[in-house]
Structure formats: C-alpha cells, structure tokens
Image 1 (cartoon, rainbow, N blue to C red):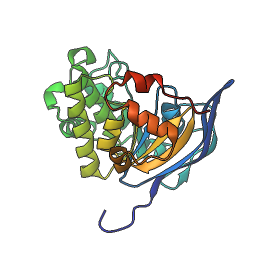
Image 2: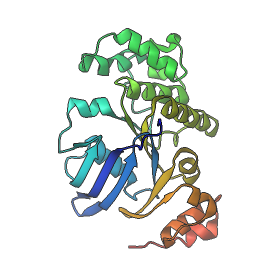
Image 3: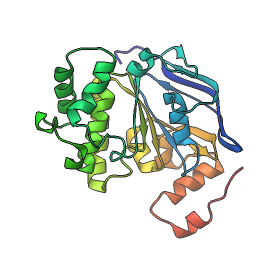
Amino acid sequence: MGGRRAHRMIEIEELDVRFDEFHAVRRASFSVGAGEAFGLVGESGSGKTTVLRAIAGLLPAWTGRVTIDGEALGATRSARFYRTVQMVFQDPYGSLHPRHTVDRTLAEPVLIHRLGDAGVRVERALRAVGLGPGFRYRYPHQLSGGQRQRVAIARALMLEPKVLLLDEPTSSLDVSVQAEILNLLAELRAARGLTYLFVSHNLAVIGHMCQRVAIMNQGRIVEQVATAALASGALADPYARQLLKSSEGYDRAAAAALVRYD
C-alpha cells in the first residue's frame, strides 16, 4: 500500500449477541487492516455469520463496539456506511430478486444513493466480474449459479465500497466454479485495495484467501493466527487443532473425536 502503514478498517471490541436464551457471540474482539483479507472460521453454529450480520446492521440487538473506517456504529446504519461496506451472501439463488433483471438489480443501489450514470456503472461492474453487456437484461433463472454469484458481487461493487463482508460466498457452488469465484475475489481485492472479512467453514479456502484468521467455537474466538499457521499446524488452542485435523480430508475418527470446549 505504497509503503504506508495500513490503518484499521474494521475494529470489533467485545461484540456480544444473544437470541433469547441462546448466546450466539461471546465478547468477540479483532481488527482488520485496510486492504487485508481476514477470515472467520468455525463449525456451523459457531457464530461467524452472526458477527457479519451484526456488522452489516442486520441484527436488531448487540452490545460491544463496532468501528468501520473510523466510524463507530450504532443500531442504525448511515448512507455513508452502505457506501463503505457491502455484503455478499452465501446463496446466489436467494439473494437476487427473481423478477428483476440484472440491470435493475445493479442499478437499484445507484438510484437509491443518487449517484447518477447508472447505465455506465452497471456495464462497468459487469465487466469487472467477467460478465459482458449481454447479461444486463437477463433474469436470475437464466443464469448459472456461478453467474448469479458474479452478479451478486457486481451489486456489492456498485457503490464502490472499501469493505466486503463475504458470507461463505462459494459454499453453494460446484467445486470448479468455486475456484473461479475465489480467483475473481482475489483479483478484485488486489485491483481495488478492498478489505475482506471472509466467513467460511473451509480452512483451505481461508488459507488461500486470507492473511489472518480467527477461529470460533460456540460464539467465542478461541485463537487468532496468521494463515501460515494453518499450513504448519502451529495452533495453540486444542479446539483449533482439532478443527484443523478434521479439515484434512474427511477423517471419521477425527470428526468423532471433536471435543466441545465450553
């Protein structure tokens, strides 16, 4: 980044989320530098997606401190927030309106924020995600799963954000398509200096995409390490070591031996 020290784009301090009696996130704290890709990994139900949803303003109640690009966030989100932060959801089938063309889907945030030049911005975003202008007036049912997720990424880029919150963006896609989307996301981050907060249950994906990772278990962050530690196995927390072992192909014995650390 031009030799300058990157400032903290995302700062999370003591984030706590409850749903009635269920304690989904327990005093989670971490920070992400500008231009960095940071992973949140854990089993289903570990709280990683809940962290994203709290940051995005999709949860009604949470406690703690969330700061994005120097702005401390409250219960509601400003227009500036949505120009800074966008989210890409797991399911490209459910995240696009079935009766809206690609053009309408992509132009909508531009019109809401009154940025102008919607048509130019739509075509530019489609090119950025590897789709030509021929996709502009298609409907979601006319697209493959990978094409739908490219449209979802293009929609997230429309307001030229600094931060993308990525909720398992490839987990519902075929393996061959997953690689294409991951490569696209890596290229976009490099070209635009984007900051990624990347949620996945797949340690291999996190190791490929991110510089650092926080491992979650039952709502808690149990360890934060550079992703190089995933390759070397240099993890201190016993649950994190078990999760790494169970991810090395499907090991029935390792999966059966996975201990819950309360």
